Image (cartoon, rainbow, N blue to C red; front, side, top):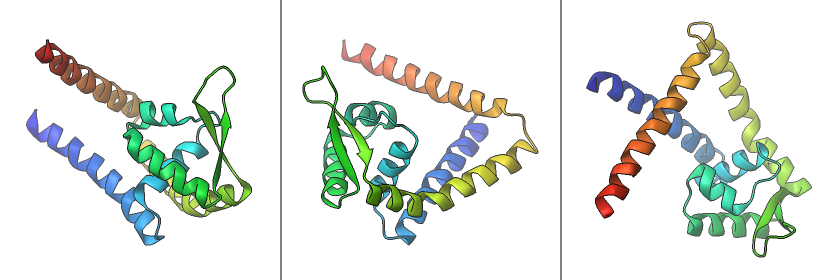
Length: 148
């Protein structure tokens, strides 16, 4: 079992490193790339949703949101009925910047997926998602059980 797990971890590390290196090559901080990516894929992205779905610490989110807001890339729209929660929106300048940063990444993702699907069935994504959620649930359940 360990060799299979090692291959999986190595593969996910290569993916993570590739995003990191692409951002660096464009002089964009990794967490900014993540914010642009998340916002480009979610029209209703809030800081809370970014925290819950992308697992970023709130302090990191506050920093990158402030930085992107100050750069004129995003605005914050209050959510009706939510006292402190806002939806993040690209400004035209931010959309242009996100496209510049993400177009090559998206094209590479699509080509890599296309080539992968020529060799494997699409169910591999479901299997990976299942593994990730199961691993998370087992480990966090154990941690919460140990805290009691």
